[in-house]
Length: 175
Image 1 (cartoon, one colour):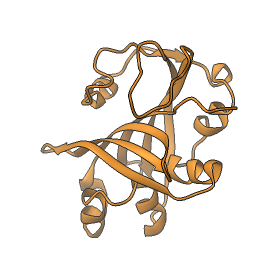
Image 2 (tube, rainbow, N blue to C red; image 1 turned 120 degrees about the horizontal axis):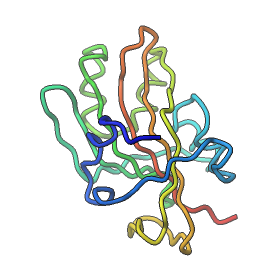
Image 3 (spheres, rainbow, N blue to C red; image 1 turned 60 degrees about the horizontal axis):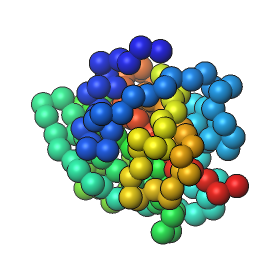
């Protein structure tokens, strides 16, 4: 899969600027990452169910431009990091009553959408792996030199407007 301009627009974080993504088919994503990534659901509820707890948001960097609000985040369940992400959120596609809930940064976007009752779906645009030798953030446990898996995803409302574009990377699970 050729890298899309939308993906390049997401690479705001220091962690991913110089990385190469190796795009893979869903069948090439190892378990349990295939079950966690290869679906059309939001990651917040998927991760909460898998890890058995509420997903909390930690923001590393955030900003906005005329089109969107963006942030670099870490999702945690308790003290355990469960996802690193870069997200561009198109506020103009949300009801204005949700704008402050999104930008105040207290909850992951999936939790806000689920609590709001808005109908939406995930539209994964591709799956990838990154060498654990080149992507070694201090907030993830060591990958032991193996691969980390992730996806490029869009959250889309029922009228096909894009709520958000996201790069989601999962840490290595101890199996």
